[in-house]
Every structure is written in structure tokens, then in C-alpha cells.
Length: 350
Image 1 (spheres, rainbow, N blue to C red):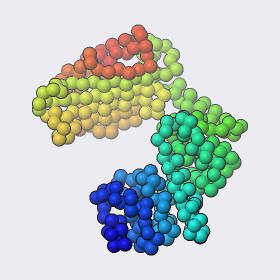
Image 2: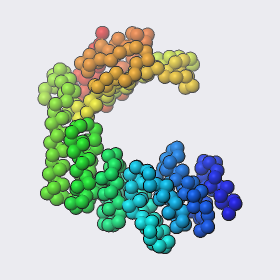
Image 3: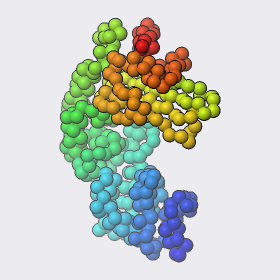
């Protein structure tokens, strides 16, 4: 027992394999307070990992589970609500351990790395929706927390019961009011949602708002300026480089530009200069988007989208460097002559 407790007291990263093996094989009479604290270090430490917690803590003794749930009483994060709801502390030891194991498997299913629209992920969401205790735990977490994983919300759309819809609607309403990134994120739930009149209306409403926001995007003014007429969308990403990346002690400059009419952050620029070209030295940054200038160590300033070519040219002069347009990467939804016209515009600054 002394050896077990010594391992539990040691920093997790000191011997990861030994630590996780010990968590999986804890004796029934281990100190519950010590063991629960050690187990929770997997999700309360840095880096936190619900996956590691779910994988390595399924076989905890009943007293440790009760102590751990007690430690989570004041925790307001989604996983804490989920575990407290899914695992009844007043149950017998055998029932407690069984429901605990099922709850941790549920956490793992919510942390899956399968592709978003894959059959494997759909199957896991369906299994969670078909398990009343876990579904109720997810509903509780979603009602209690403003920030929850898309996986939890997806389970509710798979279930599509009145209780699940009631839990989901406040998240949709907040996204509708802001019409920011959250609305785009919730749109992805359609891939898993069960078709019901209520769910169909909910997604139709979100789609209409997204289409309206995208149609009003100022980024589309660029398409008109370049002579492309009325496009449904325009997006491009380009990466510019200046300086000698091969020479020692050289000054290297990078510039990342993103424009996307589909996004609430439809214009962003990040310029960085690495002093002396050495990894150990700090980067000097200028970062701005369509909302504001976030950072400007070099005093390069920000610009509107239509003034971007002039800003790029002016920045090159300020830095005493020439941007290498010939080797720059340009990714865009534009093709053929439209793509060539965009590339020409980016080079046109004075």
C-alpha cells in the first residue's frame, strides 16, 4: 500500500505508465481522498485530458468514486454535471462501479476522434441517445452550461425528444442573437440531427440567418471591385514570405492573409518578423482583422480590405524587404481568370 500511495503522490508525468497502471488496479482499501485527487489530476492538471481520465479511471474502487464525485460537487464544467447526474452516489458499491464505468465510457464516446460525419461517430451518438441515464446526464450538462462540446449537442439532435430540444434551444437562441462563430458551429449539427418538424424548422432558421449574414458580408464588395459581379461567396488565403530563410542571422518576415465572406471574421492579417532569423528569439507581430487591431509591435498599422495591396507594399518598404509573390501560396474558391485577377490585385500596391 505504501508503494501505491507513493506513486499516487508523485507528479503524474514522473512515470506516466506506472501512474496510469496504478489507477487501473487500485486496492479497495486505498486512501479515497488521495486516490480521487490523483485521478482528477488528469482533468484538472495541465494538460487536461478527459480522454485519459475516461480511459484510465474506469476501475476505481467505490469509496474512491464517491470521494471523486464529492470533489466535483462545486465544479461547474460540463463533465462534472455529466458525471454527477449519471452516477448515483447512494447506489450500492457494485451498482456504483457499474454506472461509473458506463459514464466514463460515455465520456470517451463524447471525445471520439472519428471524422465528424463518419458512421463510427454517428453510431456513438446514437448509442448515447439510446441510453436513458447518459442522455439525461447530457441534457443536464447542456442546460447548466453555456459552453459545451458540439458532441453533447449532437446527441440531443439525434434524440430530438422534447427534453433534448428544450435543452438545445437556449444554445441556438444565443447563437442567433450573436450571429457569430457559434451559429456556424451549430450548423454542423445538421449532419446528425433526426428529422422532425421542430428540428427541421430550427435548422431552416439557422440556415436562413447564415445565408443572410453571408450575403451581406463586406468581403463580397471585393468581388464586385474586381469585376466578378455578384458572387455567392469569395474566400482566399495567401502566405507571403520575405527575407533569406537559408542565411544565418537573417531577418525573416511572414504575412498570412485570410478573406472569407462566409465567416463572421471575414478579413484577418497576421504579419510576423523573426529577429535575426533565430528560433530562440521572439517574433514581432502585427495582427488585425475586420473588427480591430489586436497587436502591433512594429507599428505597421491596420487597413481596410480594399487597401490591402497598398498595406502589403507599404509594409514591405517599412521592413526593408521585398515580398516574394512568385513563390507565395494562394488558395481560393476562384478559378481561371478570376484567380489570376485576384493575384494581380494583391501585387498592385504602391
